[in-house]
Length: 230
Image 1 (cartoon, rainbow, N blue to C red):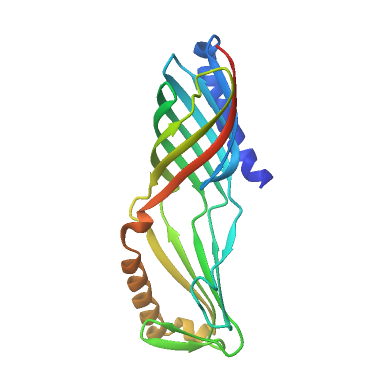
Image 2 (cartoon, rainbow, N blue to C red; image 1 turned 45 degrees about the horizontal axis):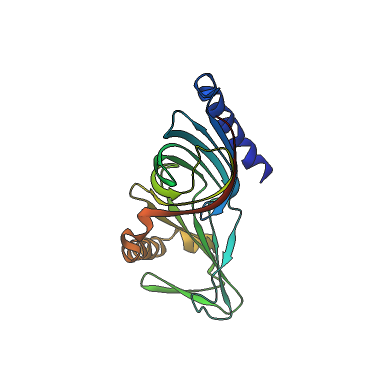
């Protein structure tokens, strides 16, 4: 977590340095935010009365147990690991407490679902069924470009002095993400043509079933900020 935060701090420093000559008489806001991108700091610098530059770092070191959600058998388990950090850099226009913004989001790592087979378990892959002696683990990774454009709207001024709260709601756009399935287990089986065909068929089916839903990453942030200067 500390290492991920350290990668994002230079970005925030660069934002402040780039805006410093113009923003000497403007408002600088330092904030903390929490939401679908995780938890972390947020810095904004006003360019004029309405335009702000904004950057942030959010940590999301979260692994979710989905075994009960998928209603899996007792000898199967499923764990979803989300990207452990997000970095955002963008700009926004404010009109009173209302705000519209856009920018780029960088995600560190891709979402990954891991299904583990316990003793006596079996799993259907494509048109085949395999036991825990053959396949011990199946992973599904949703791969996409790390840099994602985003749009958001919000409430709460960043171009004002003093203490305030804010809310962001928006979406980041994944460009045609690819689902990649990997299996661990008996090496001879995993190299066989039949198993690879079954795995490819399962990969195609799952990606088709996911549809367009995975093309978007929701952004919902709640935060507290303090502005000074101006």
